Length: 182
Ligand SMILES: Cc1cc2nc3c(=O)[nH]c(=O)nc-3n(C[C@H](O)[C@H](O)[C@H](O)COP(=O)(O)O)c2cc1C
Image 1 (cartoon, rainbow, N blue to C red):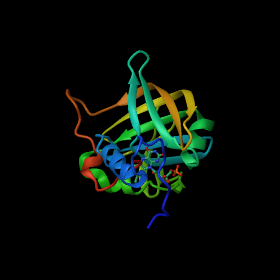
Image 2: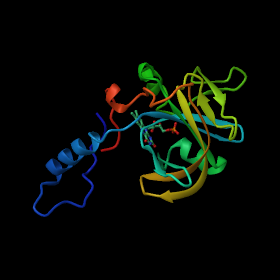
Image 3: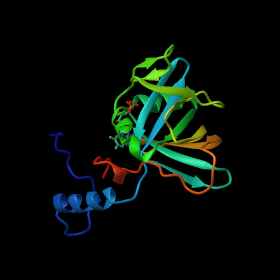
């Protein structure tokens, strides 16, 4: 059991904090979301991190936002390296998302993180999962401290996808039994 955390306010007037917290979490967990691997690199330090708070936030320039726990290894790497690469996974690859919930061991000669093959993104050098269905390579243009998380805004400097048209069938939170945040 995770340690009980006191519900975070503000609370509507007259609401019971515990039951309001449950209701609010249910709604937050119901927001449709993707699930990605966020690749980061700073010098010889690399990581892939399971991350679902990633989304496009502007069209010109093309900006993608990623919210990363302030204490996460990844937050330091993105800050120091100034880049990140988002791997979009195939729907059947949900097991991959389970493997990157703590800092990954990098075997650089074998090009594996936690035993999972990765490539260096061509422009930034950030790791991207070799099994990724598609990817977005980003250079950080701004960072905001949100308290529990840091928000990194990245400009898309390169992207990859299989040949063809139309949206790709990528892994989403609803394909897993996992939840995050709330
Ligand atoms: C389904 C799922 C989604 C997650 N989404 C995020 C996220 O959006 N942002 C984040 O900072 N951590 C997220 N995490 C937690 C990180 O994967 C985890 O805290 C990791 O240990 C921190 O990364 P690190 O390896 O850089 O320390 C998620 C975990 C899971 C299981």
